[in-house]
Image (cartoon, rainbow, N blue to C red; front, top):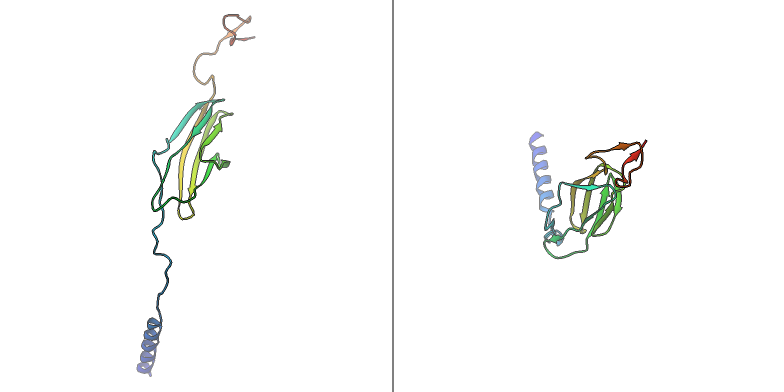
Length: 140
C-alpha cells in the first residue's frame, strides 16, 4: 500500500515536471539603469528669500527613455520639471528628494535644504533714534 502510494506520488511529480515548457519571450531585455552624472549635494544652504535651482544631468544605460521627475520638499510635491526651482520663503531645515523614473527603473535621491534667516548670524543693534547711516538699526 505504501509502495503503491510512493509510486503514484513519484509518477505525479514526474508528470508535473515534464509538463513545464517555458516558451516565453519576455524578460530577456536588459533593464535601463538611471544614474546622475554629478551626484546631488547632501545638503544645500541658502538665505531666506533666495531660490534653490538644481538641474541634474541624468544618464541611462540601454537606451534613452522618457523620464519623469518628482521633486519633493518637506514631503510635498513641488515640481515635475527636470530642473528644480524652489523659492526658500521660510527659514528652517527641510528634507527633500528627487524621484526619477523611466518606466523600467526608479531611483530616489535624498538631500537636505537649510534655509537661514537673515539675522541668524551676526549682530543685532537697538538704538533710541533711527540713524541715517544705519537704516537697519531698529528703534525702541
